[in-house]
Image (cartoon, rainbow, N blue to C red; front, side):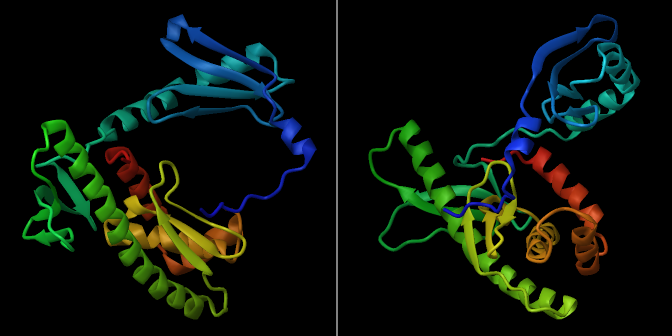
Length: 266
């Protein structure tokens, strides 16, 4: 398994982010609860997660009154974020007979069929047939067989499709940017949080779940990682490279965020 590149932190940096204080806080008059933390950060900041929970982090030197004033000033923003997440929040859908699977943004119905020697999953019209059934399976065992067959198909399909797409885009990016930086290797596996990563050596890891997305969003993720071959951070140079390759990169990034909310990963 490849390990994504991370810049080595000094001991001073590690200590700077050590949690100095943590407590759950409720503002009764504002109907807001949040997790409050003090650490070695330099700025007061607030985040709203997809589940609607709120976290506030503050430097050790900021008075509590300033923290509360900051939180109250952001209440409308918190409501907007929560409304956005609630609008787009999807429910994980297990792979079962009759459920929907996505391939390049198109929906297919899962249909388990009897397992045969050398038989492979394949599309038939608007169905994805999974050869996985054996005589004598009860309902629970049948569901497990369908899920295993689906995950196996998704990993294989993603490996083939993403491999071809990476090869094509890798060449396109080199020509467009006029350099020789190239991907060293590709690993495709199920990822729960990231869509991809790139090591300093050029080893790229992509999420198997990408195969479910429309192609323009897949291309964004691949181009994102190829830009990391040239800029191993998300600074101005990185974003300039990405915009050169994809002028609508900002819009595609927003669509991916919405996609991730509407299609929780399994």
